[in-house]
Length: 439
Image 1 (spheres, rainbow, N blue to C red):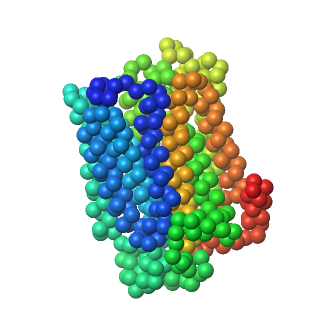
Image 2: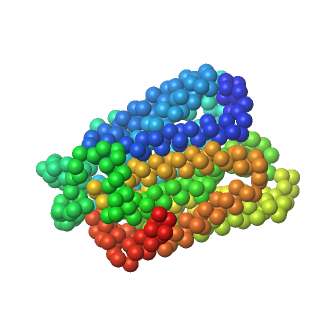
Image 3: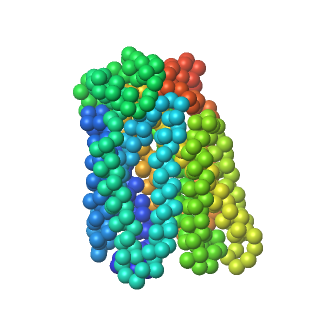
């Protein structure tokens, strides 16, 4: 935006990458302690705290007149986002009945896609405002939404599994009734005695890590870390954050046209997210990961090949249109498969004893790989028009191979019964051999 550049100056590719990605880097920081806080105080209190920290960061960003203040605000936003986002998926996982868990846990991803779409067109409209409000207005809107999130935590029900985990069975029974979970399912799953659901001793950060990487739980922890880390390394954040640059590089002549094309991709992503969200429990988790990953890697390899063969020209030729269509296809495939499955699966596979700590760490790794992609993409694109696509395509294909070998299906199963798959000898031996060979 012109007024953003008037306020802070024109940013170099490295500085642009750092500014955009700082929010993700700081989002990774709370992963080291958020799980322990959630086990002690409950998920909703941590979500509220994170939303309020985010509001403080947005105030600094939206009122900044120097880049240093803007970056401090962005760091606070990232820290707050790390607090609440690492707990939202676990909270929804724990309050959802097994038959609808996929749909409900995919709600944050659907809302993120809605936010991307709204954000593109908010900026597309505000760019015409003849003052610095052009770039400050989106931050004002984000602040209002964060306040709504914080206030909503006062009215949402506490996780019945967290209440049971902390010895508050009476309250858990009332919440189960409020959530409409059948008594049969509650007695069979939520209230059934299990060693995995037994409350741990007083936890410290070191004991949390010792527990989630202990022999009994390390395979589930590694799988959660892998899936949330690698779904970001496919390059989706490079596409989402730098779509105008990608479209301009492919040959769209006008910055405004490029920005509008980015908005069109956001509309299409939102449109395909609706059925993907509604039918999240219709497809198996493995099916979504494997088919989606093959499609994502194919898109990246074809785009890279077109650039490498010098078939993409700004002035003429069909190559640029192939690239633009494939960028659309990549984004649509991601939001309908990997974007939904990753967060669902990472929360599902953990038992109650380790769910908060392990998922927090996995979300933190996701934030870090998100930051890495957002920071490196403009630098990579400045040095090579095709190498970036080959890199993301290779990482996507590697992820498909690993998850196809070691990912048990979880669709339609209770959180408690999912743990049985990780006690199966053949599965444990396969992944255990891999982990042993690396250590």
